[in-house]
Length: 247
Image 1 (cartoon, rainbow, N blue to C red):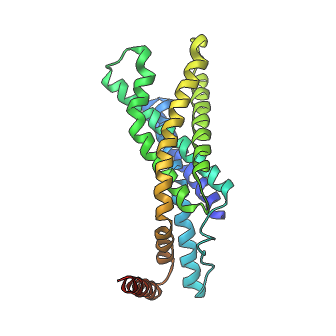
Image 2: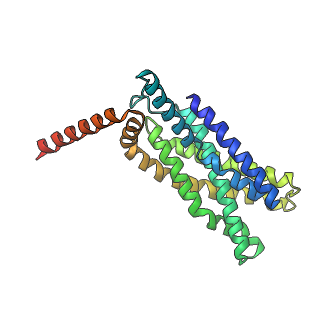
Image 3: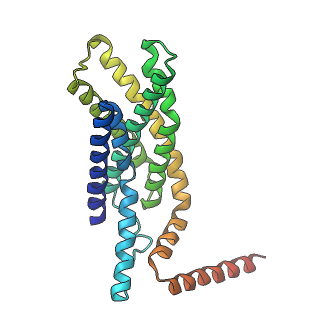
């Protein structure tokens, strides 16, 4: 699982570079933070790419490799929770910035409605991003993973809130509205959790149904061409036998 550590370093490094460039261009820490979070949403995909590349290279060099079994294709739950939380958090940060920028461009709502309008504008991105994270969890989990999705959804929403408030305070935006700050924070964190949970649970269901196909895709991506063809032919023959016996 060392690929996941390398992938995290790569995605964080890319995020830091994007953050620095955008902050220098726009001088807006929220925009820079939102776009800088994008690479982190795909850190698990980078890990899978590295995982497959390493296996292919080992097969090419030595003629053999430790190819994952279907059971071994599953990732241990602490890693799933860590990367799922980071993914959900990054999705929420990017979606929030997108919603805020959209509302600022439209400039069609009163000040007290800005946060709620930004949440509505961000909802499609939040749901789609959470769907993708949930789908990955469903594919790479061995057993039922609905609880893990709910856990990473609430953890991601809370982490996003903490980072957002830290950014506000670091730029001098201390909550002068202290009497409503706690209430607003709880409400908008709750909205983010609901959106992340809905998207994540739908994606998780899709991932569980797609798990065998994803494992076959993994096998086909790491095997040499001649072996891939043999595997496909074998799968076809088994499918033909199964359909012929049921007729």
